Image (cartoon, rainbow, N blue to C red; front, side, top):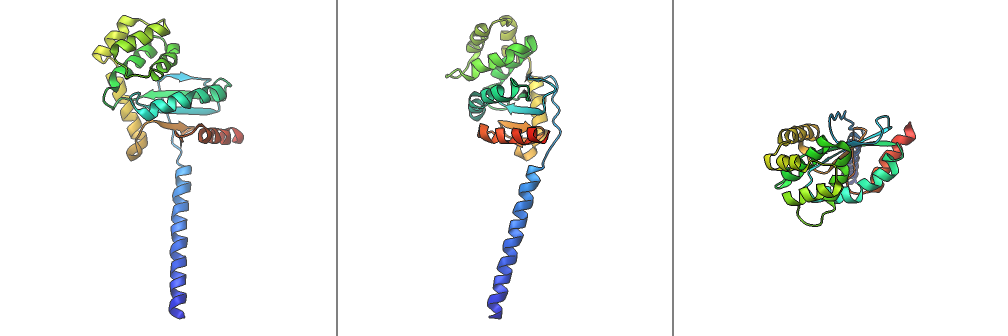
Length: 209
């Protein structure tokens, strides 16, 4: 009997220890808030908004494209247009074939910041692989963009250094957890799998104000 009691006690102690470790890991991630400072990146929404959303993406990343198509419009409609949130997108380029797209979007941003998101939307909604000619044609559809400068930026990789700095910055923030897309909401990592999870996180912040 004593042996059985000892075994039960040891088993219970191990279970409690494992539960405690899991709980500590859970809450440590929940409280893992970092300071996100982004300069000169495409932004929409009021600077005075209570919620600051930062998205890091490689435009050649399939998950990034899916997230941007399905989730960003909902964030824009429910939180950005209502003045509750500000949204900043930080483009990075590390996947094969992404530099041309990233250079094109950054050139449009530098030429005319208000055309960045409409241009990106055209690219993300394009069903085929985007080549240089497509990038020019889509920019023509958006309008108000110097197409000659855009072409030169794509061919010469005019914004490669800026993109390299973005990537280094993103890797520095995430460390071993680096991936795209990655979303931060007021410095805490958010979900990139569903709008509902993002909404819950935002509503908690708004409820605390």
